[in-house]
Image (cartoon, rainbow, N blue to C red; front, side):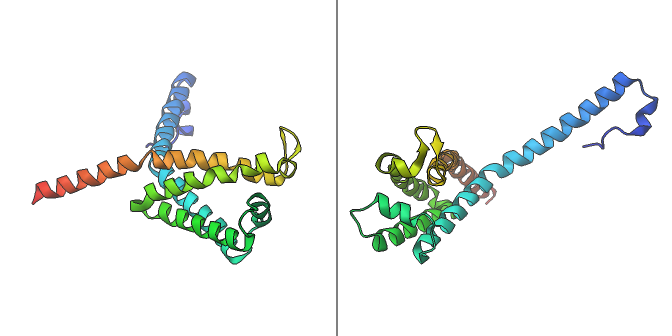
Length: 178
């Protein structure tokens, strides 16, 4: 990528300088998009893994601000049992997302857990909304953000076969060399 047009272009007509700047911006845009394309899914996968390990770990050690909400939602199992078990489940999801061969398992566990995260909307609407149906409380915002987690999980999950194909091609190429 060449540097942007500078003062040395001052002797060129304005239309040429504008075209030169446009060309440079196009090149910079392509370069940035290439890096974003290469990094987006791995960064998303790692971010998901870290969030699940962090939030799950807080539930395990008794430091989760969501523990009371979870306990109020799932009242058939004692919260002192359910909240740490849910935390362990979330830590396992996070570990699976960080270790590529286990992504499928992590995505499965995540999608088994997600419906439960939306239960307070039905069971505890007064905790989720200050004005139904649009005025979310902090707890409601915490729940609705799970839509972003679902979207991110779909993106990460959609790449699993591509990773398999890349590994298979690498193995074929190494076999062909021997």
